[in-house]
Length: 104
Image 1 (cartoon, rainbow, N blue to C red):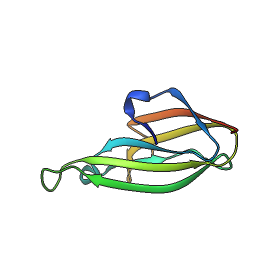
Image 2 (cartoon, one colour):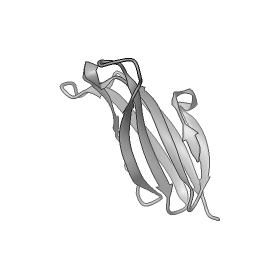
Image 3 (cartoon, one colour):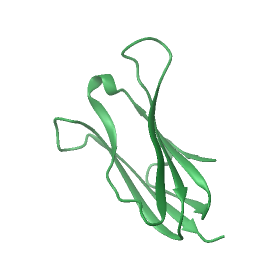
Image 4 (cartoon, helix red, strand yellow):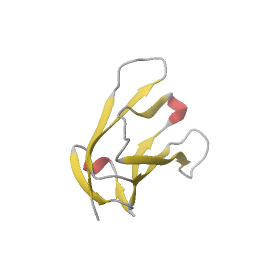
């Protein structure tokens, strides 16, 4: 499975219809700052999972936010994910990637 992380910010990734891929970004929700998916992904992509895995090391530590997507239809998708606290409308960081879904 293709994994896209913060090192691929503003990059383009190619997947095929029927493939799945994961986006993973470091997050520490105990600070109030969380990643939020801002862009629509349909009809080319389908969100399968949105989860958080805490790092080992005790309470209050960070971890990784995961989104798993399935590629359903050909076409480009501009993913935009923003890091912001729930009480603030403006983001403090943005992750963007273009997913180019190709036909089989």
